[in-house]
Image (cartoon, rainbow, N blue to C red; front, top):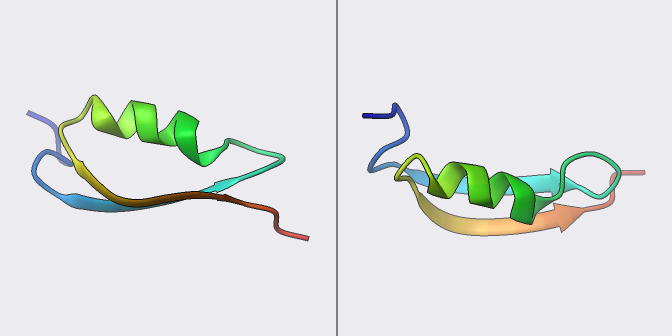
Length: 43
């Protein structure tokens, strides 16, 4: 059982780093519920 199992998660990825959909795929494997996922450009 993961520490994220059953938790709600908000994901904000970085365009030049790790994008949101990539983080989302990893978090889905833990059993967490993804409430919001986005990729932003921080300048």
